[in-house]
Length: 275
Image 1 (cartoon, rainbow, N blue to C red):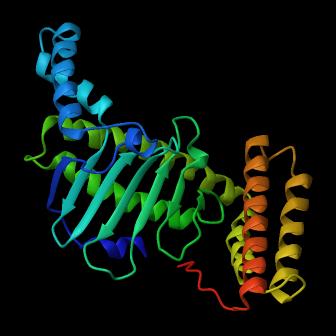
Image 2 (spheres, one colour):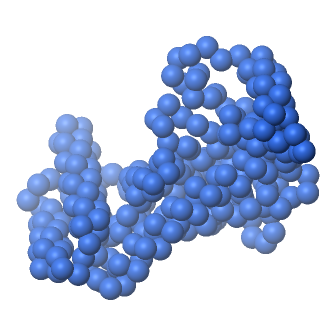
C-alpha cells in the first residue's frame, strides 16, 4: 500500500530544485540547465522588481516557481519525491524508495479543471488509469501520502522560499483532485452500486479468455451498473453518468488488451495488484 513507502511519524525532508529533465528536453528542444537557470534567475529578478517593487525578492521567487515548477524532496529513510512537468501536458509526481523493493507511487495531475483525468498508480503492478470509482480508496490514499511529503517540505524551516512556493503550488493541484474524489465518494454513498466498479475491475484483469467465468461476471456486473444509471437518470448527473461510461470503457479496453496478450504469449497468469 502507498502509505508503507513513508516512515511513520513526522517526516524530515530536504527540498531542492528538480534535477530531472524538463518538458523542453522531453519534447526534443535544446535545454542547457546551467545557462537556462541563470537566465531565468536574471529575468525573474528584473520581472519581480517591476511587478513587486516593494518586495522584489518575493516577486522573483514567485516567478521562478511558475517558470521552473520541478522540485526534488528527499525524505529521511531513503524515499524521494520528484515532481516535474512532462511532455504529456500533465504534471507528474513520483514517490520512490532508494532501495528496490517493488514499491512506488506515481501521480499525473491533469490541467486545472480536468481533475477527473488525473492518473494514479500506487504499485508497479497496479493498473495505471484515471481516478474514479473503481480505484477511489487507492487514489485517496496515494494523494494523502504525497500530501504528507509536500506539506513536510512546506513546513521545514530549511526549505527555500521558491521551493516552498513550488510545493504549495503542487499541493493546490493535489487538493483539487482530492476534492474531486470526495465528490465521487459522496455520489457512491448515495448510489452504493457504483462501488462495485472495483470488483468489475478485478473481473476485467482476471479474465483469461472471453467467455470464461470472470468475463461473464464482468458483463453481468457492467450490465447491472449501466441499467441502474439509466434507471436513475433523474438523480444521477450527466457528469457522473459520463464518469461511469468512461470507467467501463477503460476497463473493457484493458480486459481486451490482457486477453489478447495471454492468447499471444500463452501465459495465462498476470499479476495485477489491487491492494
